[in-house]
Length: 116
Image 1 (cartoon, helix red, strand yellow):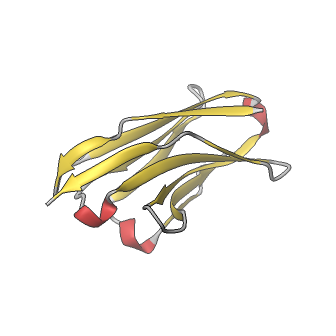
Image 2: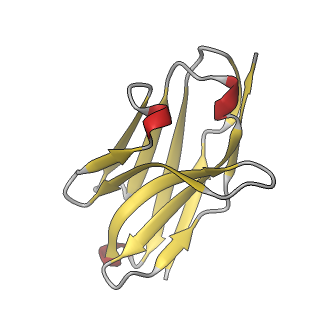
Image 3: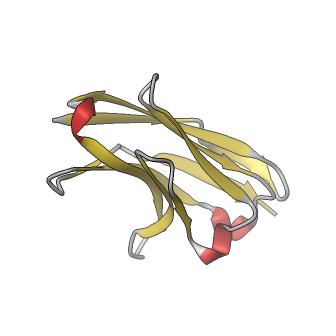
């Protein structure tokens, strides 16, 4: 099993920055890809960014150039640096880990609110 704990959410003004962290524990060696997803009330959870064990990244078009995902394998932690935040970035952000046998694990979510 893999456990994920997110931190770093909060309230920020338009144009501000936040950094989210997700610490993984448990069966760490089974993790392949980690990522961040977000979900607004009544909407589907959507991809924000992912990063593989080898460092390959993927971003949603809406966050390219503003968000950066990174991974510290020694600390079993993935980060999401969010700059130039917009009100439409307001969501609950979830950390996700997928394993080599395609099992998916989710964190509990952290709220990000961007005020206009």
